[in-house]
Image (tube, rainbow, N blue to C red; front, side, top):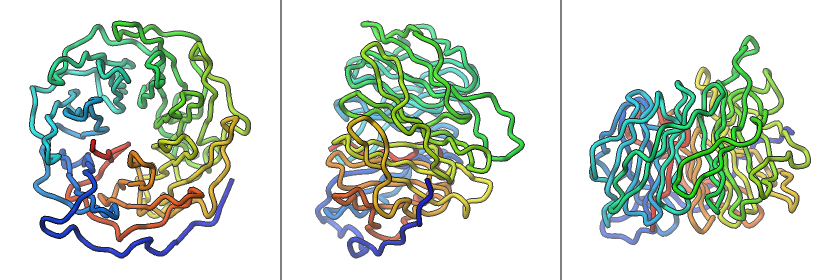
Length: 372
């Protein structure tokens, strides 16, 4: 599928949050190359304003996730193999909660169990998933030995809303025609009652560079973005129906072609739309500039929303939606935050100009909307 790029005018006028003015929430961006976290205030129209200072963290922070009560946050850092623990203040500021916990080698994706009692990280360089229990006050402790995935380069994680099954995407990026990287897979784990993992079924093939995943809120469908350039493959986005036993079956039309090297995916809270950030081509930021939008049909098939794809700066790599589904935020390799209003038909309309994060080079799924 190929579509004309959208260049919509701003949905709302640009501006800044006035001193003491009303805000509607907070937003965070992890900056991979500067090793810090940016805090943004969102005004009542959803416009982000950077609120320094940035919070120093470990080397190459990746995905930031929150405990279910919103009082603690966790950030995996890929170059020092740790997950950092923060208390989230009433004003949204992050303060160190406890010392970092050791993960496997090079953690990338993270996810908190729906129960709120466990945190998992996908460790790219040693083929494992680290398991942590979330205790009283949000502090982490090791839950058990890392789970071995059995495939090369685990990178993304997703868990069913009932907490019964954990999915792990695998593979290295395929961004040149000469790439001969290992194939991509999704590996399925059953989650035991104590939060430990048991691998089930055969690995499910996807394209090389399996990365960002998102599950619909009803747990029926799973979507996997694969970091593969169109000239290498026309299979960048996979959709699966999730069986009662955790098994995966391709939805009609899967796989889909979504150029610009997709890396991150997000389903709207109502389960009606899927958005995919396609900025993995950091060799040439001008060639990777889009967010793709889809309507999710009753059978899980994807239908492009009107005017998709949408311009989203240079190298869009992270995407997050507000809890009401009315706003979408995209982080870019150029260290900018792009803001969109989400229309009733799924169109994305820019809210304001791109806002610098203050850091350097956000990476995979580097934007997170804070708890209310």
